[in-house]
Amino acid sequence: MKRHALNLVKNPGILGIRLVMYMMLSLMVGLMYLNLDEEKNHKGVIARAAMLYYVDAFLVFMSIAALPFFMIERSIIKKETQNQLYNPFYYQIAQFLTYLPGIAVIALVSSLFVVLIPNLNGFGIFFLTLFLSLVVAEGLAVLMSLLVPHYIIGMALVAGCYGMFMLC
Image (cartoon, rainbow, N blue to C red; front, side, top):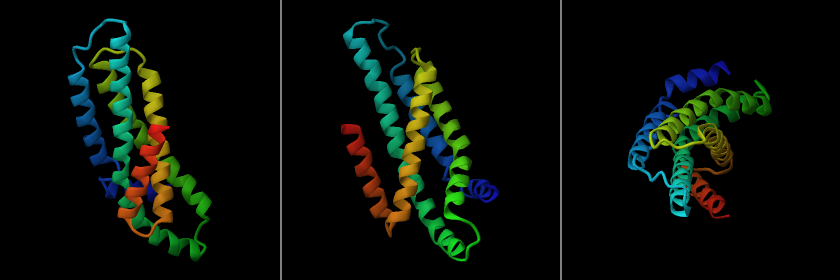
């Protein structure tokens, strides 16, 4: 876990730059919906649901940005597991636990901008939905980074999977 935490500090693109991108997008969307109708009719409900879905879907798609970092790490992990320095299962658990706080911060900040600026209800539900969506998206990105030889192919496959999930 120490190695992953150090890797997150050394590579600000994994979480730091993504956090800034997510903040800017969430701020823009929150400000766009600042004067959302207070009406509780069908049109108002659809507008709110569409906005929340759009933000969740877009942030999940942006998790593809971490794929190249996972691909770079793959060769190192392959050598270390072949030399039996550690078990791949324990490596994955450590990586998962290390990324959870960063994903939680991203989901929290994005939820603050998207839910509180337009004065919507359901902050906790949206935060939990966004957090779990990002955890699954990161997991799929890690899986694809292990299965494909090049990050461009991985990005295309992950984007295709995300699109399929959103249509179903």
